[in-house]
Amino acid sequence: MTVTTRFAPSPTGHLHVGNVRTALHNWLWARKHGGRFLLRIDDTDLERSKEEYVAAIRADLAWLGFDIDGEERQSARFALYEAEFEKLKAAGRVYACYETPEELEIRRKILLSRGLPPVYERRPEGAPVPDGVAPHWRFRLDHEAPIEWTDLIRGAQHFEPKTLSDPVVRRADGSWLYLLPSVIDDIAMGISHVVRGEDHVSNTAAQIQMFEALGAAPPAFAHEALLVGTEGKLSKRLGSLGMADLREAGIEPVALAALLARLGTSDPVEPVTSLAPLIAGIDFARFGRAPARFDEAELALLNQKILHHTDYAAVAPRLPAAIGEARWLAIRPNLMTVAEAAEWVPVFDGPFAPPPPEAADLPVLDAAAAVAPAIDWDADPWHALTDAVKAATGAKGRALFLPLRRALTARDHGPDMRQLLPLIAKDEALARLSAR
Ligand code: GLU
Image (cartoon, rainbow, N blue to C red):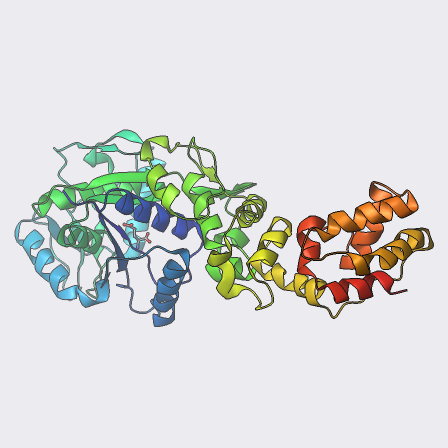
């Protein structure tokens, strides 16, 4: 069996971290098993689906590095749904319904007031059909066949079909609800594993009977616990946090993937620099049932950690021309984002206006200005400079290093000066040391 997964977003908005997590798990699973990862655009709702969102979804997946092996659009598949629907109708597995939403609501309230579960009651056999009313359609669950599956995350699942309402699969205007087209597509596309949020668990129960009614074996299912914010549920802001926001905030796609691959599992989050180790590590058995907590601060920190051992080649196209490999290696331990690298260009090449030196720092700076011209910049200039200044002034430790760092970089903190100083031109450094 070829492992085939699909990510099936509705193009009614931008992807947010919750959707991306689902996409990631599907992609990782397919890649781990040498299988296929499909993008299925669930655009049966022609009004709310927008082309700009389809384009944004593709762009976001590409940014994340989740390559796809095929794309399908539900709006191009209505003829197939129609044909399968006709088969189910002929077999008595879908049936016409005529209740108005108001009638259904009243029935629901009556059942609840009697302490009964609000399960849809089928119209008795032979009940009169109202005149001139277009029906909507429900799938007839087989009440005699208990629904069972072993969820890859949730373990053994059992549903009594009598406790479920026959789901509506098609509206009176002929438009499709999500449940049936999804099953028809999963069969047609040979989906082996459906990986999605646990909000779909009861849909799965009904869909398992749809697979069977259409003569297909259901795929394997993995329902993941929901993603929540640090304070409980995913806040409005986080819930709508799109990839554009994260990109703007300087988050690397691999940082987001590294966090989302491990949140809600028993494995630690690791600062990986490529998706490969995440592919090897995906294992639904490691996923827990408790909600997975997404913390933006944790993401920012992970992003920083990842940058600290990111190779030059991986970021070179996004760096200013003045930041070559040696400069990247010197500054990367001090960066929160790649964009911050630009802030170091003036430190290397100017224009540069160091703060006027404090009186107490003058002896160190005067000594530095005096010894620096004789230093070989190609050897280890920082070592030579600090040794000579120390010998001349007796200053050591912070009293030696800080005035020099300030004069040379205009900052109190930053990269290792041993690495940094050879990357500043000698005459530029001399000018900074003698500026008063
Ligand atoms: N379009 C559905 C959703 O976004 C797909 C669910 C599924 O994966 O089957 O909820």
